[in-house]
Image 1 (spheres, rainbow, N blue to C red):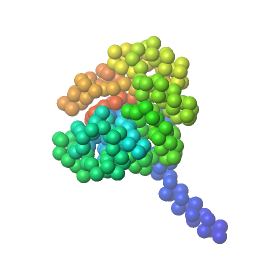
Image 2 (cartoon, one colour):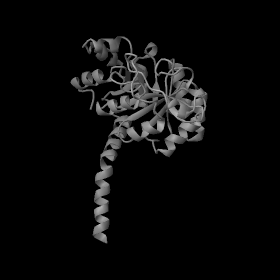
Image 3 (spheres, rainbow, N blue to C red):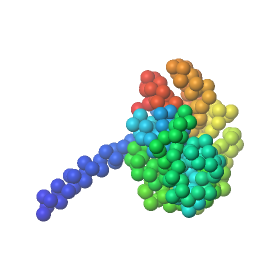
Image 4 (cartoon, rainbow, N blue to C red):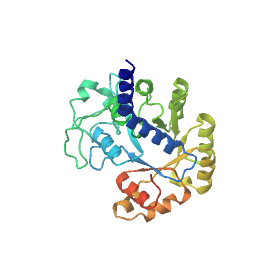
Length: 281
């Protein structure tokens, strides 16, 4: 009997240990006080070779060793959290109108478009499906495109993803509601000035703050790091363009002020450039 239990324990260890190891790494990388490494966030997941906000884009990000995926969340007419960025589904699917006006079953009839506009075989994914794929492998930034946050929080709790997910919004009313419902959840408030950074810290005590290039200074970043708060900034535009053209100079210049997390549309190229400089695991 004891041998049988031992065998089960050994089997269980080998089944769960890869996820446990991945989860440990994610937590260590995100919360490390030594912030010498830069984390890469794939905007709308790794969508250069997949439809944006698709399960394939999530798979690509995991396979490439990207640290974080940013995904956009809305809810269907019947309250199912699903991935969609735009106000309508016109650009990214073969449907028209607002996602919120369709039921889950109706949305499942649609297909996502590829980068070149052609129709793919991929469906609009649910948040639950993303969690099943990503659990233990990659951090997730939930860009909230909705006011009714309860179905999203319920999915995070049901999937036990509290330590792997953080919530992003510029609407502090929504973030306050999240904090009231479950104070253990991680928040990333959007800020537009040094003054608003101080306000966000006072209200939310966040683990990470989103800042803009207009007030991205070394003094601000050093102050946030001293408080063990990660600094997220978008590297779209010139930085992404230079990476596409094979140069990492703009990226290195951009990092001089010390941001911890860079969001990009070129995650594969950014990771390659950071690794070459010893700035990525």
